[in-house]
Image (tube, rainbow, N blue to C red; front, side, top):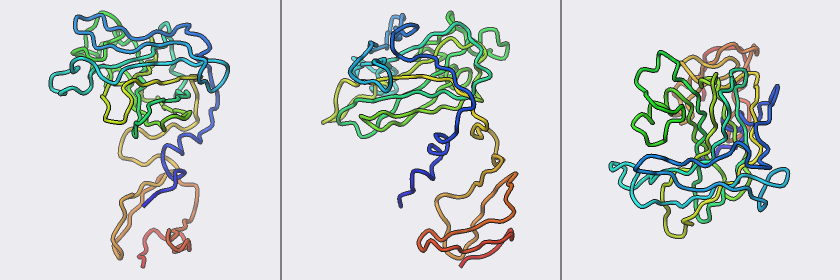
Length: 281
């Protein structure tokens, strides 16, 4: 069964208009950009960044992140070789308060010949050293290394980490809503590729072109916490139900006074009324 893309959450998020936008970087220069360099004895940082005129979404240039797919040894012994480390393009800012903004958008062109599945990470780094609730994380710099002992807590609890799936060898627009991420003292945005290796027929050197990164304000960010249904939305089981058994959908704060249920095979209306319960067929 193939669902139309317009029925996906990703499509819904992409259709939200920005009430206001702020351009962080047009990628026409490397101003404020740097690659991540791990200064520890067991360095796991790879990759380089450069300004590229080969591919760009707008203007005349983009920021290019180039990286091998493998390193010489695994990042963690338990990972048995995956990942080997990471390569990152980092945009530095000076403890900026982004609390009024709730979305980050940018354009990405991944060039990974032979790869069938392509992804990358966006990380929002916030300086939380003055936060007394952060008791399990100690670091010398606000920018915690990816493979540090405190890396998991930092990236998953005290900072923001987001995985994005991309279409290979085309310009993808990426959206990341951040209402839940602490962002009152932002020090950097990191665009990261994890070295996961490559199979036969896949390239051993990857390229990511980045262009135009924005901060946005959207009117209603996606519901991210709790079991209640977001206002104006309907939640239901997407795996389907057996014929003759109940099908349950939950909603909240709907302005509509009736509903229509449509048979996906016949495209005909099954029910159109104000009842809360009915059986079909």
